[in-house]
Amino acid sequence: MRLLAVDNDPQALEMLPKIFRQARLPNVTLASSGRAALDLIENPDLEFDVLLLDIMMPEMDGIELCKRIRQIKRYRDTPILMLTSTMTNGRIENAFAAGANDYITKPFEVKDIVMRVRVAQKMASRAAKTHILDPNHVQRDAKEGIHPFSISEPLRLTDRPQLIMPFALGNYLSQLSRRRLDNCTIFALRMTGIGLLYGSAKTYEFAFGLSQIVHATSQSIDSGRLLMSYQGDGTFICISQMDAPPAWPEVEEHIQDRLLEDARILENGWPMGLEIAVGHPITPNASSNQRVKKTFERALERAKCRERIKEKQIKQSRLSLQDDHRVMAIS
Image 1 (tube, rainbow, N blue to C red):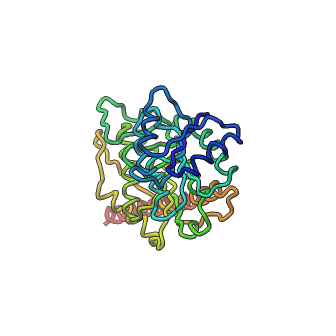
Image 2: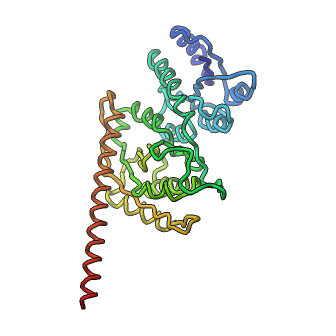
Image 3: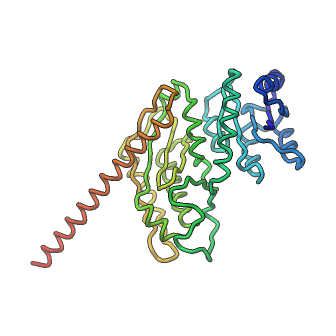
C-alpha cells in the first residue's frame, strides 16, 4: 500500500512515517502543501492507494485539495482521510461533501490512524463499484426501465456533494464525540413508489428524481452541515448537526411541498410523482460498538413505519372517494 500524507506541520510529517513503519506500511510519501501534493498526484509515474490530508493548511486547505483530487479520474475512488485538530464550523461535514471517506482527529493514537487507513483501503473496492449518475446528462436513446444498476444498489450523484457513500456516512457517525452526538439529528427518508419510477423512467430521469429529493431535503432542513447517503430501494439516511432541529412531522410536509413545486414530467408523459415518507428523528447510540448499524436500522424502521401509515391513509382516502362517487351516482 502506498500512502501520501499532506500536512504543513513539520512534526506531523516527521511522525507519520514512523507510525506507518511500525505498522509495516513503509511506503509513505510526504508533501507539505496542497500544491506540492497535486504535483505528486498528477505525476503519471506515481500511484497512491490512500491519501491523508490535513484540513488546516495555508493557501490551499485540505478540503479544497480533496475537491481537486476528486476531479482527477484515476483518484475518483481512492480513499481520502482527513486529519483535523478542530471539529468546529462544519469543516468535517464540508470535507465529506468534498469527497473525503473518513477523518482522524489530532492528536491521534497510533493504533487509531493505522486502523482507519486499513478500513479505508477495504472500502475502496466497494466505492469503485458504485454507480455515479449525472441527472443533467440527457440520453435520448436510453430505454425506460433499463438501468446499469439494480433498484437495491447505493448510488452517487454528480450534482449533490452532500450525498456521500453509505460507508463514508457510517465512518462519520462512528467517530462523533459525545458532545457532537448531542447535537446530531438522524433520520431516514423513504421514496414511496420507487419501483414505479425505476420501471418507467430513463436512467437520467431516475437520477433527477433522487437529486430533487436531496435538494428538497437540504432546503427544508436548512443546515449547511447535512450529510446524506442513498442506500438503495428508495431509502436515504440523513445526519445533520444543528443546535435547534426543525419540528417533525412538518419537515416531511416541507420536503413534499418543494417536490411538488419542482414537479417534472417524464419523457413518456407520465408525472414523476415523487412522494416521500420521513421517519421521526432518533438519537444515535452513544456506545461506539455497533453505533452505526443499530442507529441506521432504527432510523430506517421509523421511516418504514411512517411509509406504512401514509399508505394506509391513501388507501382510506381512495375508499372514501369511491363511497362519495357511489352516493352521487345513486342520487
